[in-house]
Amino acid sequence: MSSKDKVALVTGASKGVGRGIAYGLAKAGWDIVANYNRDQTGVDETAAHVRELGRRCWIVQADVGYGEQVTAMFSRLRAEAGRLDLLVNNAGVQTFASLLDLKEEDFDRTIRTNLKGCFLCSQQAARMMKEQGQGGAIINIGSGANKQPFPSLIDYCASKGGIENLTKVCAVELGPLGIRVNCVAPGAIEIERTKLEAGDYAGTWGPITPLRRVGQASDVAAVVVFLASAAAEFTTGQTVYVDGGLWTAAQWPYPTEG
Image 1: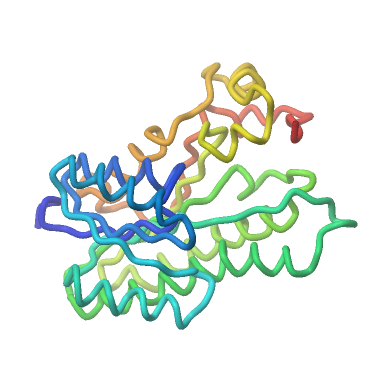
Image 2 (image 1 turned 30 degrees about the vertical axis):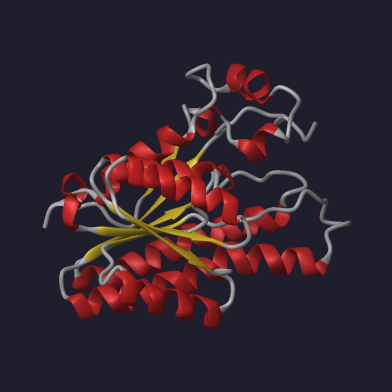
């Protein structure tokens, strides 16, 4: 089956990296199911552009950290799109707070959204792909926080480290079903959220990145498109860092908020 016949669900597709991934997949011929939680205006913009690219796009609302909402989302996906060939677990949140100051409810929200959401969506997607009997792919969006300790991001680092091992276990369990599971870990990517983290985001992170620039959502999308394609049909359980060499250089101190 060619990509033009396939459907991809992208969580957190209303802005940023998720939106960029939806666009990249649409350009490669995928139809898109665009998930969002609160940003209706943003996801409408994403869907409109996907359709301008000549692909179908369905919009589904769900907070991926809650099982009943994920179940309802997949019920709608089945009814409207009819199939699923790729899941991109992109939805995520973070809290800037030190270990001593981080609130329990913020820790719970980050783990629930980033890690539990990845589990819940992967479980539903894998069940659907198993029923279809044609394999499929799951791509989890990680971070440099998969392996690097970022001060004041303890909840985020814990969630992304968990995602990397979740990726490996899922790859082992789902491999016999022809379902590949990989992780894409971006470095310093310039999007709406990260621009707010530093007064000059590109000027802060670009000089310490070996390729001497920050990344764009399209850089992440390109790797997602590859891992979803037949060209990567023997690749599973892997984490691919899309970081311009940043985490290889592993320079310290890292730029801090503001």
